[in-house]
Image 1: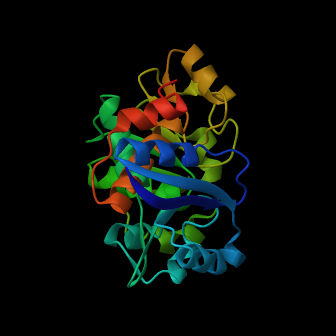
Image 2: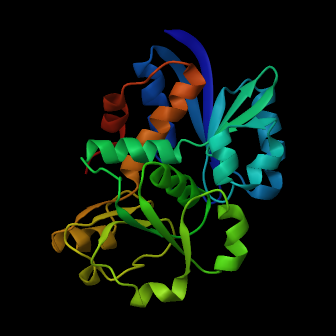
Length: 265
């Protein structure tokens, strides 16, 4: 093994995160030794934190709430996908500066592939309008899905969604929205039960981007109703795999990451 790769996950709060375990498993599977730390970081100290990580030789960091958009002003370059989604979940430190990319959307496509779900022509409800929601919506729409994003203030959100092919709908309209043709519902909010499970078609796929030590009640109730449903652990595995590939410049096998966090569950 080659020594010395340091990674991190940044966000606020970071009460529970599996990212360090995924980082360590991925490094080991790719033949590297290294460390990963969960560092609680708010937006107002993000630039200082990034400077510290770069100065101490860190290779990269994953970002979560509330940093995915605000980090963009602290980077020297971002990928075209991140620019369009206005979202960065992966930061790297190089001799010529800091770079940013998003692996949320591509990771979600990988997850759908393992589930045998083809997004082409699928009607998708995206609940929430933040960075992860935009990254997923961009990837889904480019794959041929028809995306409706339900957000609190559509007019305020419109600028950040202008390069994503999706309809923005008021959150209040969700309760009366017709769901017979909905193939996928993605919860990208902190809400415990954003849609009543009994109103959704049984052939739909539900993905809640939240995850914790146990599967949450909304996902359990969906499964009890016969709906295929998963929490955010699967997406975490696949986006981490893509982040690791960017940092290490080589592919990383997904099985080692899945075993490290007990996915699927």
